[in-house]
View (cartoon, one colour):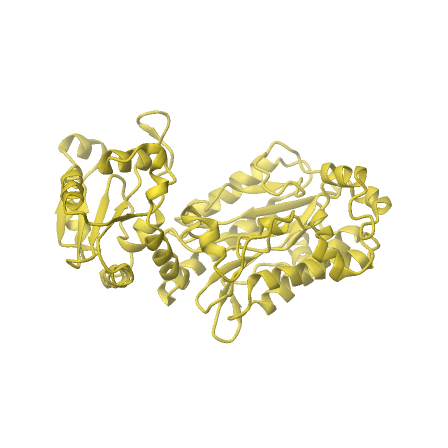
Length: 463
């Protein structure tokens, strides 16, 4: 946790933005895997963490905007729990760390909400993403389960996004901790990969690095020789000479802030010529995209610039043709780059995505496209100082997509389908860093992680 003044000030700012009513913040509970006492690793709700800071299950909080008070609802552990869990602080003790002096039993929240409803007070809550909280909100507020999201407070959603989007210096310190653990994970993958090892063994190594640094993977590890599959969570393949390994994974810091890094490297100690050609296009795209990311610039425009850089590079290799601007405008480049350039990052790896991606990445000035590829851009609006985001361009050769487009003769004026047979088993390359938007540009967060061909090969050859 940060100092209690951080949480007091965050709540005060939120109250000022909301104006009146009460704000209901349910924490998360433990979720069973296959029976009641065998839980998935506990992860607190990120907005609860942001405003309350307590990383413990079975809690809820109410911020009374009109009274300027916060109440924490939870139960002290009985001796039956202490026997299994050891000594535990009381609810009053943990509440004090967040600057909260008013505590009540967990079930007392029902009466508190009933009184608020009888007074016709506005109860603001965020849309739940877990079934347990959906059911609780339904029971507490008397709203049918299937209507809970329809009654979520748009005013609160927008206020939380506005506040959490701007990262403070103390948050940047935590994010850099996460990025640095993530960097250690990637170095471990590069140092242990070799022909004959399974993807699953590499996965175990990198997850171990995260946990041995008091973190936990910020999202499901992507570590695969089939980098053309964007979110590949299969780990059963054995690495073979001539292949590439794409690793997209990151760690949380002990305070739950996320890192999200991607690197691609050869199974062998060096890249072959074909791999170098594609790799250098992606690397150039990533570097120029970071340079273009600055306050006042729409990330949509940075994405489109990245698409043009990729299309120009592929045209130089003979894989694309025609006018690059027209190719990108029509979406032909998406055969090779079918996802967005990046997304916001913070307490969530896709920061605040539970509040609605269009609220996070879009606003009244920029609307989401329906075009293939471009519709997957998670962040399009203007960048502001304090934003933390990912920059992750890639080039992929997806045989199923190539076959489909070639069959339909799609974008025949921009794609040289006859040249693609030499790349059918290539896989994919993605390179990703996490950046902070500053007053004067942007800054790559964390310690440098090898990404030039020379740097990556130096690591591979040092084995």
